[in-house]
Amino acid sequence: MPNVVAMILSGGAGSRLSILAQRRAKPAVPFGGIYRIIDFTISNVAYSAIPYVGVLTQYKPYSLMDHIGTGEAWGFIGRRRCARILPPYTGEEDSDWYAGTADAIYQNLSFLARFRADIVLVLSGDHVYHMDYNDMIRFHLKNRADLTIAMQEVRSSESVRFGMADVNEQGRICRFYEKPKECKTNIASLGIYVFTRDILVKRLREDAASSSTHDFGKNIIPKMIAEDRVYCYLFNDYWRDVGTIQAYRDSNMEILDPGSGINLGKWGVRTNSALREPHERGPAKILSRAAVSKSIVSTGCIIEGEVTHSILSPGVRIRKGARVQDSILMDNVEVGEGAFLQNTILDKNVRVEAGCEIGTGEGRSNAEFPSLLSSGITLIGKGVIIPAQTRIGKNCLFYPELTPADFPSREIPSGTTLYKQSIAQSL
Image (cartoon, rainbow, N blue to C red; front, top):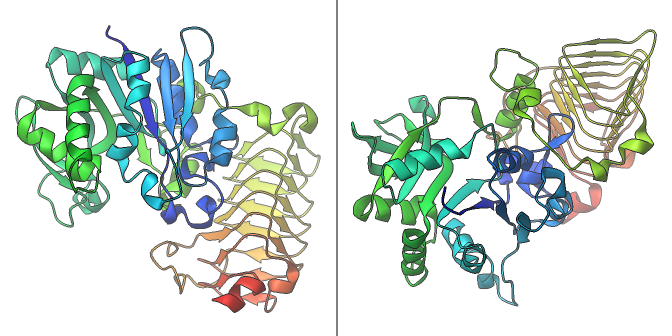
C-alpha cells in the first residue's frame, strides 16, 4: 500500500447550525451525548490505519484544537503516527486566511511532503458515517485514477445541497455540477476524495496562480474531470451531512433507532473524554420515581423525572416531575421541577427553571430565520437561564447567555428570536 496522508477540512463557519456553531467550529459541535461531529471522520482515519492526519482549522478553532489535542485519544501518537492541527498562515490581512477548500490544502503542501504522501485523502470534518478508506483507496489504484470521489444516490430534491455527477458505465465521472438547483442525475458527492498526490499538487498550483475561488467543487474537480481520470466510488451505507439544524437533530435521533444504520458501538467511534473530567462526574443515576425510555443517558446525569426518546450529555439533571421528550440536552443542562420540554435542543449549561414549558403551541416558522427553524424545533443557546413558569413555543431561537432580565414576558410565542438586551439594542 502506498503512503497515505489524510487531510480533514474543518474550517467552515457552520452558519446553518446557527448558535450551535457561533462559538465553536462546526466539527466541534457536540453530538450523540459524548461525541463531537469530527469524531466520526477522525475515528474512520484511525480505523483505516492511516498514520498521518492534518486537521485544517480556521473559524473559531479553539474548542476543536482542545478536543483534538495531540491525537492521542485516537491513537495518533508515537514515532510513526501523527495528528496535527493546521491553521492558516494568518497575517494581518484577511487574504492570508484560507480562501477556499483547495487553498487550504495548497497552503499545507509541506505537510504532505513531510510524510512523503503518495495518496492524499481529503475529508470533511462535519459528516456522520463509518468507512474503511482502504477499500476506496484500492478502488482508486485499481482504476489508475487521478481522483476518486465517494458518492451516493440521493433524492432529486436534495441535489441543491450536493455536488452532483454524471457517471458512465465504467464508473468514470463525465461531468460535475456543484449544488445545482435542478439536476437530472441523482449521484451526489459525499465530500470524500482520494487523490494521487502528484496530480493534486499540479492542479493546486495551477489553481493558486489563477483568479478562481480556490474551491474543490467549483474549480478543481471540474478541471480534473475534463483533463484527468476521475472515478466514482459508490458508498451505500449510512452517511449524513449534519450541517443544518434539522439534519443535526434527525441524525442524533437516528442513533435511537436500531434500524437507521447508525451504530456507535459497532463503529467504534472514539472521542477525547479527558476534557469532560469523567472521574469527577461519577456514574449516571436514575432515581426511584424516574422513567427513561429509548434514550441515551451519559455519565454524571441525575434523572428524577421522565425522559423519552432523547439524548442527554454528561452532567444533565432532570428534576422530579419534569418531562423531556424528543430532545437533545448538552453538558450540564438542568431542567427544573415540573418543566416540560418537547423537540428542543439545549446547548451546554442551560438552566430551565421550575414549571417551564418549551416546544409547544402553534407551528409558526421562525420569523427571522425561517429557513433554519420551521419544523417545530426550538433551539436554546449556551448558558441561557429560563425563568420559572415561562411558556416557549415552537421554532424559537434563543441566543447564548440570556438571563431572566432578557425575557420580555413569560409567554414567548412560536417563531420568536430572543437576543440579550444589550445586543438587541445595538441591532
